[in-house]
Image (cartoon, rainbow, N blue to C red):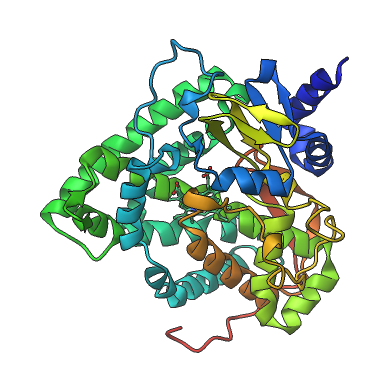
Length: 418
Ligand code: HEM
């Protein structure tokens, strides 16, 4: 077997259920072999921090995956794509309109609500199953979902209608050349069901405006430009799906790492100020979004290689967080790790450059709040035997179930109203 065939094989292993539980040894091997080209140069794999960081910020790459040479020329156009998959000037215009409605101030105002929902969920878990906490279904999933629904102005009673659509869309976010064709068809169907749902909700908000993000998006205006109906729908779906499928993984991955490193959990319990460090360390060490892609729009030298117009660049974000060229002792989970003093050490879990995650402040706040409450309230937590299983996704990756046995959940110590 040639080195190229071997590398292609390692890449396909990322979808193996046994590897999904711990992809890091495979990712390390791919990073060390990278950058390298496969499939006659149509696909270039990047796993080094410096290479991925450079490509994410390079204006010669496109986020329109459909323009890659790997996409069959007769493939039908994908309807309903969001600005995540657009380039300037459309990307710039839409992102600016959304940023106007989704500011760090809007997010900061949510802090008391996020604390209240977290406390409520932990208290409900204490009542439902004393001595046991199923972290995903009882905290990590419902917290971001409730917050994004409330923020957008999606009625909680509608949630059962679209929870499944979101999971189907997330499943389709695997790189297309690694995912079966039926995923694309299923995602298209889910996207259409979402569109029907949001079309009705947008009509209702136009008739009766609310104090919510959807109403703000309907109103958002910038230099005379507004979101069209199709843009409004694709943006609402993007925010809802991002709020469903990523922060869940961040909270669950962080709690799992803390359970596996009891000294770090003890440190967090002793000093709640370490919650921010725990969130950043999890984003580096075990990020919820494992990879993303760009398409070269020009000849771009990457190390010894040259990507040419149409080359798909697969960026293994999860491999960059453990790059020994950037992080000392990269496989060690350390919530006190100093990276602020070394700007180059910033992780790429939220990407970088023009598509840097718009929801990062929200995800950080939700995760820090959940970890603080977990460390303060859950007594003597331990991973239950057989209590961990993973979703099949290797891109939006994270536990499906994380069962924790505990000595009980303390009642909240926060003053009422906070
Ligand atoms: C831990 C949680 C999260 C992670 C790890 C994450 C990760 C990412 C990454 C890697 C990208 C860039 C993708 C690319 O360019 O290829 C991205 C973009 C984006 N994220 Fe997040 N995300 C998270 C949470 C959220 C939340 C909660 C929201 C909003 C509710 C959100 C909204 C967005 C949006 C709108 C974009 C597109 C930005 C653009 O294209 O300009 N994300 N996110």
